[in-house]
Length: 602
Image (tube, rainbow, N blue to C red; front, side, top):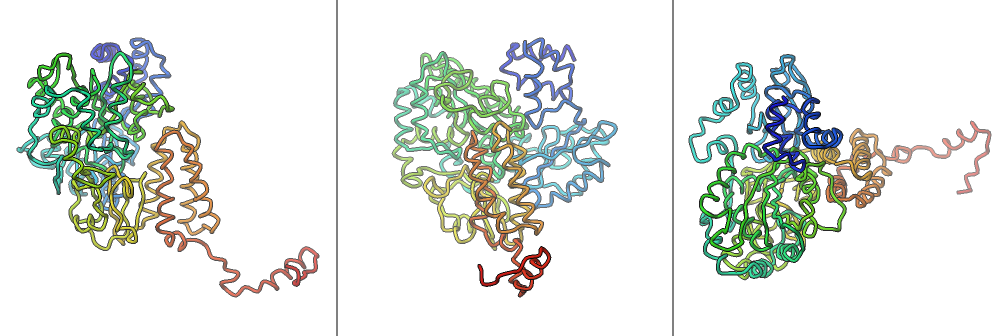
């Protein structure tokens, strides 16, 4: 252990801000992070053990106990349950002889629940030792467990489950389908890697790049919708020793998987977008913050980056531009939805708990390591390349006045053709349902749990920043689904699990509201409970970040758009409904306490 930890720490230059990388490597080497390893890290990194332990305990995929030679993480999102997750869970427990959260006595297999792993279009799905297994069935689970007991490695398990993978990107596509159903400017096949970097950047200034992005009126594709050109301009003007370009690929919003597809099919486009941003802001380094659930992409993406370096698209004096020195590294998270929030992401990048920072200052002024930083998501960087390639004016021809360009949607649930669709902003929900083959639809969750749940009366609404803003997640629920029990409760428990705990509002109120919801579902709710839910939800607005501020949305939007589901469960006033005799009741009560009733007095 001592030699292993020493080698890993040296690999990262004994830099405590690279603690996430160090812990990931130790976890994957030993299967867990032991007390001994923590003690060694404390000495080598000159950190307190408490600081190291608080980082370990914050992230879902870190463990201080052995997780089993084969660690099985089964997705527990609503869509997973819709397509047979319960049968998969029961089969796993039966075949292994243990319950979820346990490890077999021989230390071979561990079973764990985990939140959405970005595979909503091919559920039920699980991660086993960083390999993805999709469209699971009880039969396939029995085969997988059998092969585990035979000691087969994960590539053997994958190949026997999915074929030998003899196609393009075998390490990815043999496990995961991209399911691209509709292409637009981002997903089109006419992209040639490096065209913008080689042919356009040498001819224009960084200021001209920013001006073109501003002219396009592109807004960030992550959900918040801040104007991209302004963000880049603010960062370029900010003073600092270094400037950083950070790509947020921590798409943890349940139901979202578009970034996974873009990085699989068009990684060069994303990396070129990051280099383009680096040129615009005077950036020194780019960092792709990739969620741990996508760690199966590691070798593939490393290979793409190296090829770009070999082709002169990353590194020193890119395209012969003096001073344009820019490279990209990949930083993996370790399982924390809140790290999708930009300031929590920065904390994680620096090796700490992913707790959101107070703002201001904003990242463009004081971001990674206290230096000016821009943070955009995968789709935003990919879009920026297309804008510089074709011009900001060209880009405004797509979408609407306040929502220009296209939007890539992750569509899943009760539909014939789940997958990724690139549409123009302004596309309405009804047309979307027709496009994916969704019939007898009860509801659509727009923007994931932090978004809004709408019913048929609102299917005329359009996707855009002035109406239905979304980061891309669209989950469809048929009329056979129990929205409150199977969807709203699941989403509330997701927020409870994913809260960083920093704010008392988010830490406590989500649990209180969920308990109230379960009371209503049990048939014990009264009218006052509905009033409580509406009132209490407002307290979450005081939370520090978007997670806390939107954590009540599953209840709030379902109360607003599906009130009948709640009213059907609320206890009625049986005294009046059943012809209860009020005067006799009052007479009896007064007699009991020795009073004479006056029925003429209100």
